[in-house]
Image (tube, rainbow, N blue to C red):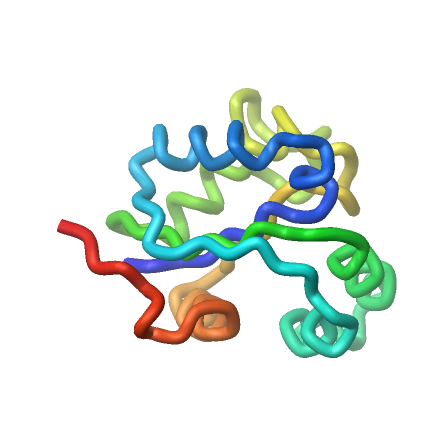
Amino acid sequence: MITLAIIKPDAVGAGKAGKILAQLESAGFKIRAARLVKLTTAQAEAFYAVHRERPFYRSLVAFMTSGPALAVALQRDDAVARLRDVIGATDPAEAKPGTVRKLYAESKERNAIHASDAPETAAREVAFFFPERELHELA
């Protein structure tokens, strides 16, 4: 199974992307594709359209366009659920010790990493950043 992670602009800007990738690989994820991106407002609005009616939508779009982010397609068994466990709760104050957000997030809003929340979402989100031909097959 493949899922998407985005190492967000706060973590990329703070030089934490390599540590986060190492943690994901240590948790058994294989990198199928990766791309450093600077989202435009239109791209961020489209990607986070599901949150359009939420009060945090505008600030989320502004944050995600504030600097480069690293989009990563990851593979492992039960990838979606496992990634959610590895990254921890949205609010780093509530995240379990050792999770990505507990270790690297600044706040609930600047929380270091995005992860797909369901297999259907993962398929759509991976396709948003990576055409099928860019996903590298792994043994």
